[in-house]
Each structure stands twice: as structure tokens, then as C-alpha cells.
Image 1 (spheres, rainbow, N blue to C red):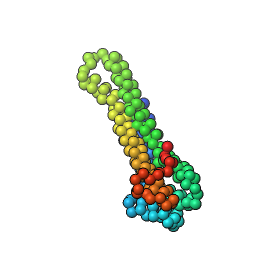
Image 2: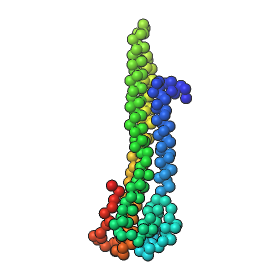
Image 3: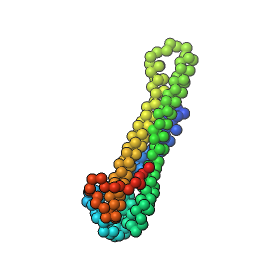
Image 4: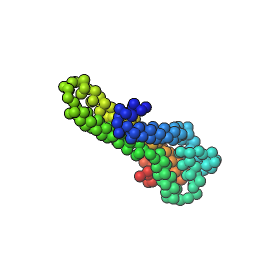
Length: 212
């Protein structure tokens, strides 16, 4: 570990901190997303059926994720349609914030790490040329190669930290968006079912609340 940090020079500790923080964020977000309940076809039909009959047992048995949104809708089924839309809209915004939490920090690490690596490389090359300038013997290709190898070491590690961080940040963002689109579509259907509307007819009116 000490030799690894020594090769990276003064930028070793910042890069090590970025790698540890990035790994912690990826694992924390992965734990959150793996707990999301998928919206299967059977579960969606049961949810719409519960809204048609105002089956409040779904309020009692509901867990987190979209089931909590369904329970919220059923608990407020006696409200006018406009107020139900506002309640669901507020919940969806909170759910979106919960899923997207820390993703900006993860993407920041993905941008910052290669910059730190590049800075370490520039500092290493400055030191290399300073050493070469002080040499009395002829400069050989082996001497240059050794100095360049050490100088480029931080760039390699910066990229190794940045690529997983950027990939995870973008991947989690896409995962969250796709999940929330499915939740919104299901709650739209459930919202209409509470009002006794046909859900499968072309041109059926949709509530106007959205995630934005």
C-alpha cells in the first residue's frame, strides 16, 4: 500500500479517498435499488382491481416503493381527483429524490478523479524533467521510460476510479427513471380506476400530475 501511494506521489491520497468514497456510494445505492419491488403484470392487475373496489387491505399490506404509493392513493380515495393528484405528485417527487440521492456526488467523483490523475502526471513529468536536467551522464531511453511510467501511473488510477463511478452514476439514474415511469403509469391507471373509468380505451384521459 505504501509503495502504491509512493508511486502516485502527492495525489495518491486524494485518489485513494475518491476510490473509497466512490465504492461506498456505489454499494449504498445498489442496496437501495435492489430493494425496489418490480411491477409485474399480475401485481399491476391486482393493484388496479383493488382501486376499482377500493380494497383498503392494500393499505395495510403495502410495503415500500410503488406499493406505498398505491396505499397512499387508497387512503386518500375519498378526496377529489385534483387533490389525489397533488398527493401522488408530491410522493413521486420525494421518491425521485430518494432514488437519485448521491448520484451527483458519484458523477462528480467520476469527473474529478481523472483530473487528479492528470495533475499527478503533470507534476510527475515536471519532477522527471528536473531530474534529467540535473544529470551529468547522457539521457538514455531507459531513463525516460522509467520516468514516464511513474508519471503516467496517476492517470491510470484516475481513470480506473472514474470509469466505474461514471458508469454507476448513469446506470442508477437510468434505472431510477425507468422504475419511476412504470410507477407513474400504474398509479395513473389506479387513479382512473378509483373514478370508475375504463382504462384500456384509446384516448382515455390521464391525470396531469408528473414527476417534473
